[in-house]
Structure formats: structure tokens, C-alpha cells
Length: 293
Image (cartoon, rainbow, N blue to C red):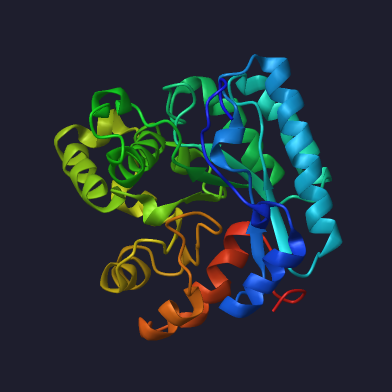
């Protein structure tokens, strides 16, 4: 419920670990990363309420991971409506045993490339935590009031890509090359926007020398999940656009989830399927392959 209205109906797959593990076994998933449903990020709360919400969700996630440490990893959340407070909270995220943080594609209409998030991004790099960007309340969604179904199916991937563009444009990957940032749903519209931004760099002296490399090279430093609903495009992302940076995503347990991720990877005939199955995820999350093969 949000503001007294039904937002989404969910079932016990969101919290029943035994049922979830059973579904994982049936779909060939050895290890799964748990993260908050994006609406729980609660950026519209006040700072202290957002902090309380974050700590409650993070504690819940950490307990779930601790129950089955060989089956689950976890991404927590922070009150990004207050970036300095969010930065301070990252050390607690790491101490709780979580691998990183899920963040919205925008925070109350502001993208992550804006200066107010610089301290948070620097601290995430310092703490060696992964950031996973998921679409949330896309900018301009109010213009789709007559076509609400276009918001999740079209506006979400555009907003995700715009978030990535602001990070590249403001030089975040240049300043923090070790910062691991992943984007949901294949980065959404990342491919055409990266090429177009590249042309922009050519005609603006690399945005007044903010960028030292082509925008697409920074885009290739990011990680992406493979949930793009087309095997040809999935192969393009994994083998041409960002080799070694594409990991398996499922959107479990929601409506548009990939119900057979193992089969989809197998039938896509990747040159390096193990990269999609686990190697890119290990690199993104900082998981030691010697411990979890």
C-alpha cells in the first residue's frame, strides 16, 4: 500500500526463502542477489524516516543472507534523499555483510551525476561496494498519464539510461575507475544514447575536457544485467557492447521476470556463457570465485 492505495500485489516468494530456493533450483540458479523492491527505497521520506526504513530493510536482507550464505548475496539501500547521510551509512552496509547498494535511477527527479551525489559515489568507491541502478519513478512519467502501461515498459529503460549518461557526462567513471556500477534491464536505452553522447563529445571538445575517453568506453566500464527479452540483443550487449560486464538478471518474482534464465543463456549460444552465468556477477559484486565457484 502507498498513500492508502494498492500499489502492487506480492506473494510470499518475496520473503519465504524456502520457496525461493525451490524456485531457484527448478530454474538452475545456484546463487541469487536479494535487493529491495524499488518502491521501498522511499526517497520521498524525510531523512530520518528514510534512514530508519533503510536500516530495517538492510537488517532483514542481512538476516536472509546469513541464513543461507552460499545461496544468497544482498544489496542494501540508503537514504539518498540526504546524500551525506547516505554516504555515512555505507560503512554499516559493508559491516552487515551486504555486497552493495541498490539505488533508483533518479532521486526525487535528480540523477546521480549531479554534484550533490559526488560524496556518496566517492564513498561507495572507497568502501568497495557495488551500486545497482534500478528504474524508479522516471522523470516525465506524468506526461504518460493516459498510457500508464508505458511507464514500466518504456519510461523505465529511458530513465535508467539517462542516469548512466549523467554519470558519464560528469566524469564519475573517470574520477572513480574502481567504482562498480550496474544497470538493470541491459541499461535500457544505453546503446543509442552512448553513441549519441559520443558525437556530442566530438563537437564539444569532450565537454570542455571533462572526459578523457570516448563516452562509449566509459559505458563499457559499467555492468548490466541481461534482461532485455531478445537473445540477439543480449548477445550484442555481451559480446560487442560490454564484453565481460553482462550478468544474469531475472526480475524474480515479478510479472515480467525471466522464468527460465539458464535455458535462455544456453540457447543464446554465447561465445563465453560462463561470463553471463557467474563471472561478471562475481566481478560486479566483489565475490571471491575461490569461495563461490
